[in-house]
Length: 175
Image 1 (tube, rainbow, N blue to C red):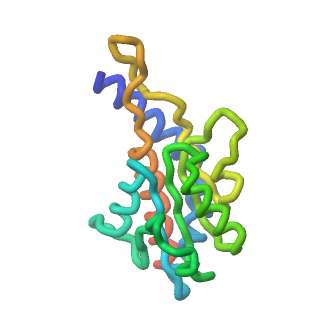
Image 2: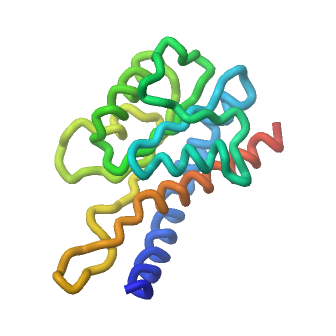
């Protein structure tokens, strides 16, 4: 199973790299606005996607000015110079949608990472300045009972985050 999973995952890495190259630059530019200004880069992840916030704030290559956004925090704490990266398993996450709606109404730029659901429900992508579709609909590997397992949403989000981080570092080095 591991060989199948890694083969499928490598295919996804290539797909994400090819389909998100321009968006990674756009997201890095948005986040750079907070880094060169007086703002913070807030990372808000739900469920397993909290891994991105931990990586951004506590990882070996932590992101300067990054803070994890807590859903219990007050919207009054957000300034116009702050920028956000919102990460969810699926783009119709209710808590993330509330934050996205607020940011959009306040004209605060932000990027999102999630899998887009196939139905036409309200989605983060409709509010965000840049959206990364994880292109995940099910697990990557069939098990003995025919179910698909191995849903690499956090791995995908971390892959995209690192692409944004590398590009952001290049932008800030030129600044």
